[in-house]
Length: 285
Image 1 (cartoon, helix red, strand yellow):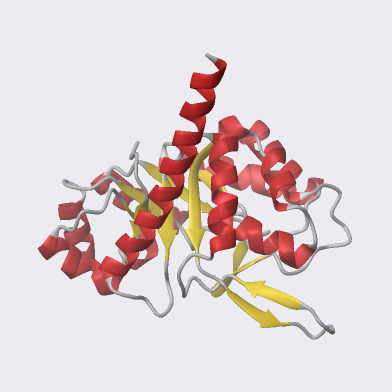
Image 2: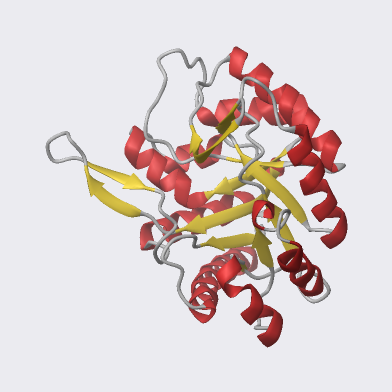
């Protein structure tokens, strides 16, 4: 697995990356941008010879009550077979309704009924893809009164019942903890450390809420990584150890070099944590 942070490869940068071959440690793509675009898929296959690539699905919708789209799974599997990605991931959310794809990742209650739906769909996805599926924690803005477990408990149980893996979006943890009023570090402590295979970091915006003197953090993926999220990332590394870490930037996309600068910031935090851990080992040794 890569030892440095990677960046999300979006279509505006595709031809530049093919031509320039910048010094990115690894790349992550949304397969939905490639499965219906043969030219882009060919360029991606060319890049796969030189870069580790991860596939991050946004249209699988494992939380949809009516089931996952098997035709879509087959299309994504064809792309997976072409580029042999290092990881394949998706979201704890729903985004489809019969005949419609919604441009959002919508929340779910955390109870046994929802868990049964996700277990069934994760099993189906893993069988279709022929490999483990990493499930990502969402950005949260509302809770459900019917929930009977918290999010970390829900994800832990999903791992236990399906053998899936987890993608911990550290920025989502930071913003959800702020929005929902819980402790971000306690949330990370509640996740099964041995199931974490990838970390995400992305920018967000802070907006005024309707309540007096209140703010809500929105997962916009349209800015640099906030210092508070980087600080929490350091805690995540101390808790989980190094995991492949991805910089997400999907709106108001900057230059590719600006993405690499963000990856450098993340690598600096990882280097600091490693130095701390080496120092402690020397003291105890």
